[in-house]
Length: 550
Image 1 (tube, rainbow, N blue to C red):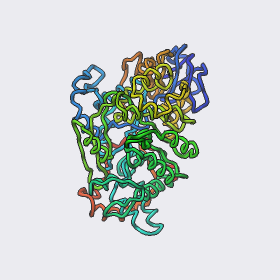
Image 2: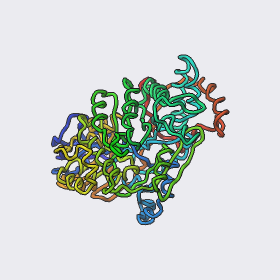
Image 3: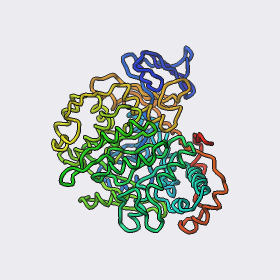
Image 4: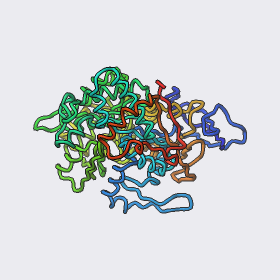
């Protein structure tokens, strides 16, 4: 295994309280070590910035919805071919890149770990196959459980034993799929939409046919994940995404989960008040105040970036709403018993009131937030914009002059409904960027070996030229090291690595199978014994993170 000494760089490792200190970083056997021998390769990083490899806590890169989005965006793929070389496999780029290209381009940005944020358990084989086919990055996926009919049945059963069975069922599902964590998308609301085209307006609305409510789903599954001590807490996509006034729903969801660890996905899409004429307004400050008072809660932003995007979500009602607003293409899919899906190619326009407000609210969440460890960088790729827009987003956060220029190009009526015109002069530091793109996501995911450069950490390192133009700086790292091997140099891939599959495991009573099997027989078309993914080619090898309660 290669030994490397990174010498003389300004190290930003906030997890270990290192803020720009000039020091060496030594790598051996895929880990950060105290020192290496005199024969180690030396990388001269003088005048450069050294950070851990990037960690994307919320993106969409694998599974049926991603394939559906690829089919709906042939033009962007056709215009961005990736040719086969002696080292690289062919593919396509565009808004939703092919598997190989996804891995290559994340690596070229300095990212080394990515989480697929919403996978139907029934599609776990598909998701695992695509993740296995995505090189360069370590990867994990979250399984959708917020509209699962079998879990609804368990919630309805009386007594404390029902809670234990539900907890065992959550752990069983992780084991059956190879998943890493639990995602709740519009809990109860997707099933309600599938049944009668309705939508959840209150957390206490009942899902027809099951007599459970979104609040009960949040409490039951959020509580089960918390009690199991999974490495990543329950990952919540709240109800009423995108609707004016939904900030009240988001705050009520946060209150429902108060005292339990939880992570809120793409918070920008859930931060809307009501302005005159039915238009949305910003409620970002209210959400930030609540987060500040509840350190057990975290969020990623889901920043909208002007330009082309693809909305893809397990929240089927959102896709239908965008269709009704004039989408040129739309795909809807229901996954039996478990979830739904809506996909719409989309364009965010700076001249649009709604789009400019969304853009402004995302920046408010970043710039008004008191604790960067609670507010993490994401665009909900590709919903708010491609992950390739991360360098521009970082420049918006670090360069007030550039940000003011971009504000001036946006719909001013919308901007006046945000705090962006109130002399908001905050500029992120390099250390804060390292927090929101590396240290905080890794910590929230429970990945103790990632997001930092302490002894024993994974040898995932990104080295940047320290450029005044922060977009250029973060778009083209000088070096990227993955697992202790140099994979990128000056914008060129030099080596292809497979990356590691990450999964989580919690102990459960195997007798839960006796409870689940008859419910599967009533609800699923697939036989219970055929449901778990057992193919070692898909599941092994993997790095398994044990739950704290196991």
